[in-house]
Amino acid sequence: MRGVLFASDLHLSPQRPDRAQVFFEFLEVAGAHAEAVYLLGDLVEFWLGDDDPDPLHRALVDALNTLTARGVRLSVSVGNRDFLMGPAFCAGTGAALLPDYHVIDLFGRRTLLTHGDLLCVKDVQYQQFRRLVRDPTKQQRFLGQTLEQRRQIASQTRTGTQESMLAKDDFIMDADENEVASVMSAHQVTHLIHGHTHRPQIHHFTLAGQPAQRVVLGDWYAGNEVLWCTPAATSLLPAQDLVTTLTRPTASRK
Ligand code: MN
Image (cartoon, rainbow, N blue to C red; front, side, top):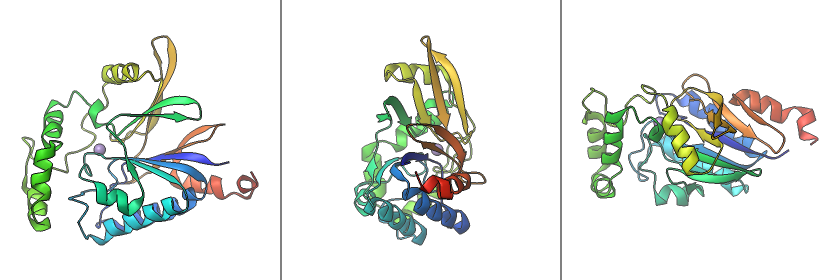
């Protein structure tokens, strides 16, 4: 049965080529069974612009392009590590970039997608930093510098907490429950999928008298929990377990 795949927080880095390889191989198998793939942010550790010739970033673009070339719809949310992904990334991969909040029809259920950093409202310092780096004028000025200059800025710029500009820990604050409820109500959904916090889980709760779910995807530093949805079922499971399920002889008979 064809499904819809959600993953996030791959944090691919030249320092961890083995994880990138695992992801590329996973994408090949999942891509053969998915009608749509949603990557909800932080695909790489640092994205300093679409023009970065880093071989790992090129390999990622190629892998995503292979996926869309076989007819799989690919949508990408940017995260706090890769918010500078732009038109050239889309042209190279065939991906559509999603806005901060995006509602889809997931087999008949309105479902809200977001990276997740906006939900961590208690991290006031991060939210201020986010507004700063998401300013289009500042981004254009940054992208106008040479890659070497951009690398220096990224590694040297410090926030007040001694963390580098792009490497602020994703998980110092969890999603705020009141913000979650407020955002879900505003978008008229009872189903939310996000990443960022690296705390994979399906949360069940009540929202305005209705049963609601919030699915948190995992990161790919150690684990790699992804969400696989078909009309019949929803599973949050490690990527390799999904591969096992999808490639079982019984699964391929449909
Ligand atoms: Mn993040």
